[in-house]
Image (cartoon, rainbow, N blue to C red):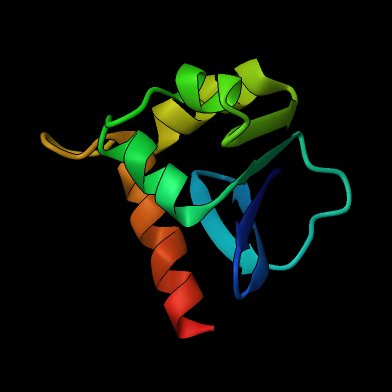
Length: 104
């Protein structure tokens, strides 16, 4: 459903979230027809998660590119990945994505 592409000096890392029946699975690779493609780098994603920069500002600086149905992504992502107290929803996925990068 949602494709994430992280561009780093070490290369390009691609993951997609498959959300179905109240379950979310993170897979490495590309999804054939994602509803939305999110392109960024880990540092920008962390800054967005820490609220050091807004998603809107990151987009205007071309540090965050969202292709496809952006409103579907923002609505569903926030609803699914709302995190407790001090962690924003962006930070939750940042931690998950960063962990996946380390493991791969």
